[in-house]
Image (cartoon, rainbow over all chains, first blue to last red; front, side):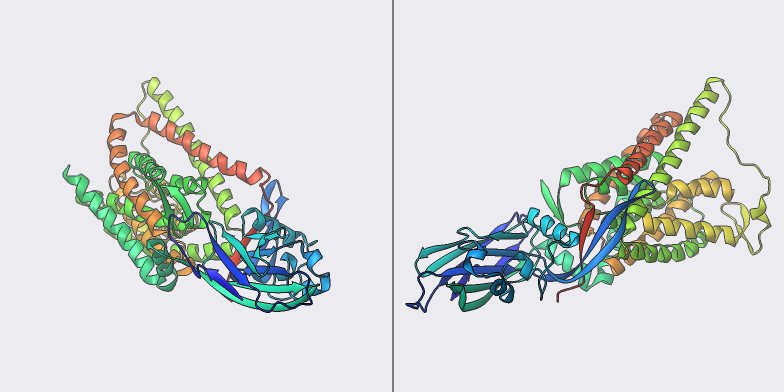
Length: 225
Length: 308
């Protein structure tokens, strides 16, 4: 149902954000439906997240309490052609994991009154990592062809991104589709990061060796002058 | 020109970094120290995360103090036996320091402990320098020679057992205070991202009664070896050493140090110490301000673990 362009996003040192475009075509128009609704949920790599809260202790601000959440989507954007509550009822949205609060966790619904979760969502919206755009964010090019622009901010994480598309008519899911694209880092920076994790001993020895070499070169360069 | 620092995960202007390296190198060369106590805070003020700053400055200090150590070695101003004895304590100190660093980071208290340590250490050392330079300036005005203490009086340190003779330094002293000194320098070096030269030199002179002639060279040998070990350990345990950041800082630092060393010969020592003291107190107070000012956001979010 959907195609994604491009399927790989390469990040180099000059990367300042990008975007991915998804196209979809509705192939089984049923006479029953007056109009179609399309919801696209894009979710990025899931990671465990530690959220710490500072409090004032003896006049200084210190991390006092912390909560750990498992498998939190680093990137989460929900797109639809019109407001979600007009597309389907709350239970249908929850069962189909549509909307920010229904898809932050790998399973279950987030409690938005929780101060930690609320802060996470607010911070990530400010960073351009989360959003819920429901007014024409899914644009119909013809009655059966639609397009979604997925902006990726500068701070996008490398990994596999899932694009889940659901077709609604009269509040019921008619069809669904899962696609994915990958964000990769390329260039010297990516090699450095990879080496620092995969061969950390060799990396550390190389750093120390480079320092000793620089020190030695400096001492001979300036001893002669 | 912007470059991207892969481990610090930050784009930064390469000229700002080079200038930082030059400036810190200049100050470090002037006083014959590594300059970590200024470099680490400056990187933190440039938005590099404190943990990456500490680990990367270890690499930077390895280079600057190794270059110093080599030039003192050529002038035969290094007590290698003393340096080896200090390093045997320093190795253990560095191991404990990296362990402490990792533990503090995992419980989320590294940043606040670093700020506190910097506040205390910088204001104390800077304050002492200002007071001391004003005092000796006043002494000079009264035409009295500045005091150079090297009394032969014995302290409790000289009563300790397992004495070793350090021929080059012409001292005969128990191994324990030497190990202890090395341990402390290794420990704070690994935790705070400083070489510790500005602490080590006074300890060697006033506490262990080593002669000034060999102290700076010996300190440089110890600093470059403990910091090289700290670099490897920080890379191995926390993957925090940013080799590109380190390289730019090192190049700026070793060049700046040469000019600093030359300028120091032309300036009055009291004025130099006074100016550096003011600078150090200023950096220390900035840490104090960040501890007591209400942070922009009370929450901090950290991704942990690998892909799931």
